[in-house]
Length: 305
Image (cartoon, rainbow, N blue to C red; front, side, top):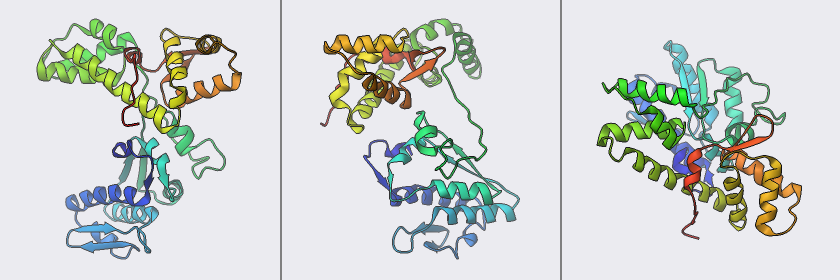
């Protein structure tokens, strides 16, 4: 779903387009799949490919899942539907895919789901598995959080990765001090090191991280209508560089504005930063930057406004 991250909203047609392409990739690899779609409403089969309709007879997501389940059941297979960066589906207008996922959970034994995302909102605002009005409420699931690695794990991760490429790497501690324990940045560093050598790997990784984090922060401010509060959000991130308490944040905001800031405003700002995974809450009321390289983002200039 990352292809939709620059969209203000998406419609069912967009989702169907992605789904159609992925199902067609299966039909090219596995014989007989198309036969299970021929009687499905809104599906057209031509040659060795199919197309989904979003018009009057639109293709229902649940029907696609049912067809895949029937094919898998007859052929001793399983189907795993992976939805990456699923928080983008919060922008989906006019169609809710959660009832279809709930239907598959209850009735389609050969269909499994892996839902991934880089934001806490995937669980709390999209899947809403803990809310009674969510179609997925009460369904058993396994939750895996990929947190920032500690120093020891980061070093072992780098050493193991380089070992797979025949490199005896002994700069793990230095890399950790420069990049922190984000699995993404450590992986990107290793990629650059192997492709281009040690010389520019650290500098280029930090530059890339700074640009990407700046873009993500800008998208967060613009898409959420928060641009007018940009200085507030940046002040909170600045305050939490080395960890901060709720009181620290409130004091920092009041110092910024030269006036009293009510508790509700502090709560909204904090909750937004937590929901979008810019901050994490650890221990007893202590907030930290989710990615230490956010420190490199000194000035956020949102272009195209």
